[in-house]
Length: 270
Image (tube, rainbow, N blue to C red; front, side, top):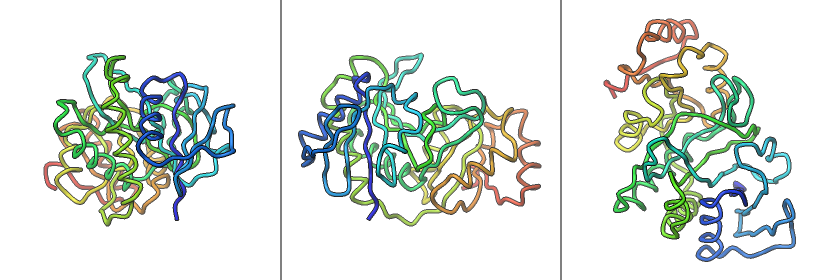
């Protein structure tokens, strides 16, 4: 059985909201273990942890937690302050501006990301919120498969109990139904909020792990592509290109994938 850790931060109102909903509705019981001086809760193969650090800077937190997969439940910020629910893998395509390490991706699970995204779309379909996959970004640096699931984008949304309940329900449903048979892909191109990849994740049997957005393509090299493949928990079947979202880097990316002998598909052809 896979052991899961759900991690929230005492500095994060959205995480606190999600944690409170998990404890209230999901049969978590307090155990004798402590983490950062905070109580730890358990429900079968799932433990709920509270750290006093900002999640994006909680480097190597996986070394202090006994789990196979980490789910970070957190707030999301956006310039537009759009009410939203988001899920994504973690790591940095270039500089480490918000935790993690420069040009280092962290392990992730395409199946968990897809299932979380599908479940969010089901649970929040009447919320009026944007529901989206995001490109891989920010920390913390960890060496176990990890995903972020987030409430965006202001205090109002972070503290809304209904939103905490939606995320809590999503996490628990996905953990109970973790096994699905998908084609696994790495996404390259397009905007940070992955409109074309979102449609494909909902419409097809393709599950995406790491996504490199258009604004980071200039930094994408063979080493980072290999990292994205190696650090996906499942075996990667192909690279999925947001064809119109490759811009001036299109030819270079295609040549690089050919040099690596990697199969690739275009979003406008799947």
